[in-house]
Amino acid sequence: MARPVDDHSLDQLFRDARSHSVWTDDQVSDVEMRAIYELTKMGPTSANSSPARFVWVTSAEGKARLKPHLSAVNAEKVIKAPVTVIIGYDTAFAEQLPRLFPQAPTAKDWFADPRHAETTAFRNGTLQGAYLILAARALGFDTGPMSGFDNAGVDREFFPGATIKSNFICSIGRGDGSKLPPRAPRLSFEEAGWIA
Image 1 (cartoon, rainbow, N blue to C red):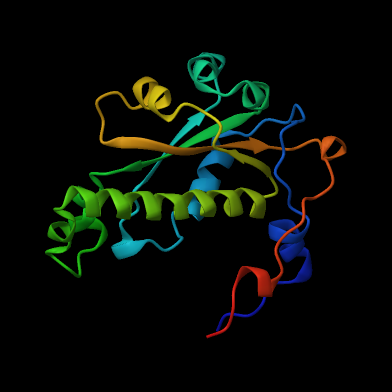
Image 2: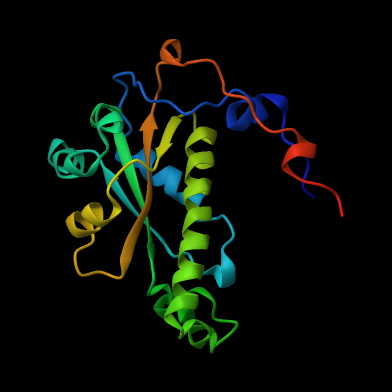
């Protein structure tokens, strides 16, 4: 039976967690990147579709390929981060459904309409990107998600001729908390929603 996690965990995942843009020199190892993914992949998606695709940009060469497509305000944040993940979504995700959702042998056919496939891939790939943020935080890393980049340029550079499209990017490492501005305000429960 599920139980609430402790306050320390809630602080690490939500209350004290911040979006970082200045990083320490601590690196993120291949083993740690894989550990982040192993948690990320467990989050729910429609029909277990798992459409997100992740490019873990760590090398100087990879960052040089990414840099021309970043907005000026984001370039330094990404180049100095230990790793920046390009979170994409595969519009041909349904090809994997016979393996990922075997309880419904016709599930692949549910997404024959390209518009429906695109919407499903984008929605569920975005969810998986959020799971990535929480997985990284759960494992003791800081994150810096951002959308200030040229999606078409990134797609040409990293997904040429593919059915994969970029959604957003997220740097991962250990942030320099001394460089954080004050936390921005959030909407109250009543401002953000209501009970029906």
